Image 1 (tube, rainbow, N blue to C red):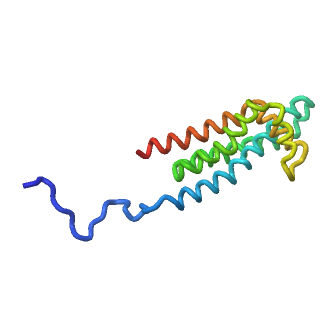
Image 2 (cartoon, rainbow, N blue to C red; image 1 turned 60 degrees about the vertical axis):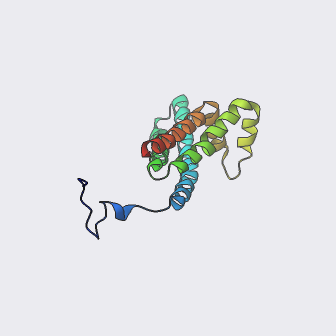
Image 3 (cartoon, rainbow, N blue to C red; image 1 turned 45 degrees about the vertical axis):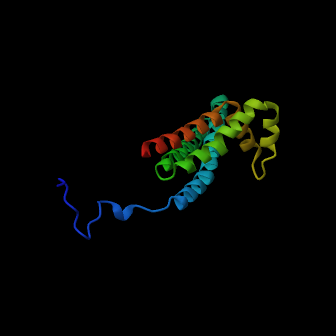
Length: 160
């Protein structure tokens, strides 16, 4: 005789109504959100950092708050992508690869071609081109990519 009792006929475990059978749609939605939000966060943070450098050099304290708010806004968007790993780890990993690791490694491998590639990006101001090149040149793209990929891997390992 076993020591466990069979559950009642209509019983289901707590939280069963929130489980989904497939994770394909989660992966697709998470990847799309990550691929859209990550470059916006990087652009805001990079432009805010460039503005902060300029107000520091020029001594213009009036522009300080706009550059600081851009950096904080960009950091919050990147934080959103990192926390997206709880919903879809693949989305965070793909965003980290596409917008961080691959451009960072490309800059390390081909530093002379990086400026030309950034200059060829359409619909951006010259200041944004400078900000993105500084983001790549200073290694922040590589760091951001590694952190996002690490967040996705950590969420995957945690689930198992």
